[in-house]
Structure formats: structure tokens, C-alpha cells
Length: 352
Image 1: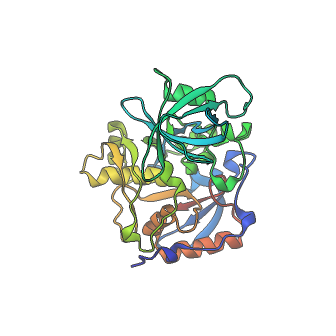
Image 2: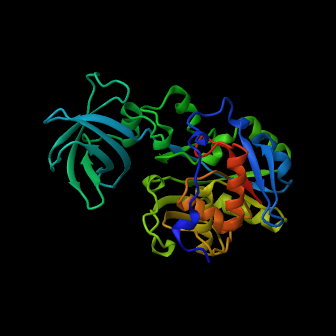
Image 3: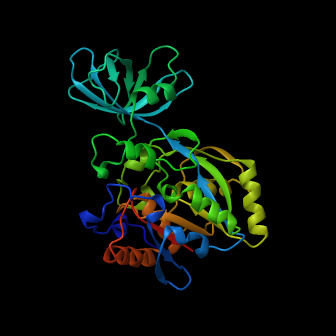
């Protein structure tokens, strides 16, 4: 069994990192990886309805990305400050990751300005309550401030660092959300779903490929690399997720009728597998810290549509648990040779 993080490393040419979205969502290339034969074939995402079968079911994560990236200044010194909103607790305290020069002490106020308007007179004051050992800031917003309303007013989309853009553009505002996103809560997009257009979803339905939805709010752990050498020592971050009763019922019906459950993205996979661990009903609502790594028996999915992932990431480990490390390694070598585009705005892989 592969258990060392170093076994999930690879070298990616810098120019294959997709830093801009393609002109159209459904223009992405699609690699089909057949687990039974080991065969790799090349397609486009628009071919998906013909690569699946009538009676299969696509399951999507309908979480919506928050404009969680914040900019401001320290009221006491004028020093620049940048933060990433994570969540709010039941008392209204916000949890953030933040960077600034110098030491900030409890009681100090950060004056957040609209992300693209540093000279705007509008300010959102945040008072530091405490910081924990992991660097999480606990701050008090103004009384009655609604997190989502405040973020929509002052924040911007938190693009992954490798995109290397100081601020999300107008194109990012549209393209770094799925067309079916519904529930605000993520700090990163469930990127496998970014390839779908309303037309592609409609073509899948016309082919008899059903569709269901779960929710997993992607957390800050997405940005954090695995920091241990042995995978068994890695503690996965916790994220809130839900498999609603109607989705559970639809998935059971699909399996009973001989269809396959095709998970769109690793976040959907994590949600469905977390639910499957808790019993036969598949209905689940709550936090999950499930780390899927070899060897893993998949209980809830039969196939996976996913993007190409960062080296040494928990996501690369997950797809290796599904397809086998050797086969995934081979597929990535082919993808690099064939000049596929990698990461959030990149191309996709369908594992069947």
C-alpha cells in the first residue's frame, strides 16, 4: 500500500497551470480513464453525454463561493491588512485567516474597505477578540452585521494562489462559480462543476442521465498542503456537508435500476462517502473530516469527474484510492505530454 506523501508527487511545467478560464465552460478537454482496461482516451467535456449511459446519475455540489477575501487597514497604525473569512459562530463572532505587519492585540480594530475601492469612505470595522494557536482570528463585526451581506458588499472571490491575480476580475466573478451554485458557504469553488453549462446539463438529461445535488462548503483546508510524510498521520480539515433525503432516494433508485452514480468533483465524493459510512440511508447533514486514501472501499460512487490536482494534495490521494496510484500516475504523465491544462480553470478527467 502506498502510504508516503512523496509517492503522490509529480513535476508540472509552469505553463500548464490554467490561470485564465477557457472562452467557454464546455471547451475544456476531457481525459477518460478506464479503471478496468487501464486505457486513456481523449475527448472534450461536451462529449460527456455520449461517454455515460442512460440511467446513470450525475451528482453535483451546489455550494456557492463566498466573496470571502477582505482588505483593510489597522485603525491604530494604518498598516495594510488582508483576511479570508471562514465562518461565523452562533454568537456572531467571525473566524478569519489574516495577515498584516506587526503584532495585533485583542481589542484592536481593522477597518475593512471594499476590495476594489481602497479609498472608499465606506468601512466595515472588525474588532479582534482573540487568535488561536493555528493563527485563526476571532473578530467581532458591527452589531447585527450579516456575514453574507457584508461579504457581498466588501469582499471579493478568493482565487487560488497559483492563479496569481491580485483581485478577481469580472470574468472570474462569473466563471469561478458553477451555473447551478445555490448555497453560499465555500471559500473555493468545487471546480469539476465549472465545466457545465445549462445546455450541457440539458443534453445530459435528454440522454437519460439523471442529476442530483449535495452540498459541501469547501473550507480553508483546500489551500493547505499535507504537512506530514506518512498519510496515516494526516488530520483532514472538517467541512460542513449535506446529502438531502431526495438525493439519497434518487441515488438508491439509480443503483437499484442498474445505473451508476457519477460524482462531479472530489467534494461531492467526500460528501457521499461520508454519508455512506453512517448507514444505509445515505441521508446526512453535518461536519465531515473524512480523509479518503488507499486502501478505500467506495460505497456511494461508481465514477468520478474531476480536474487535475496539485502534487502532494489530499485530492490526488483521493483519486488514487479510486483508480490506483500507478494508473493515476500514468494518466498524469499522459496529460502533461498532451498539454492538458491543470488545476481550477483547467481540463478534466472522467474516471470510470
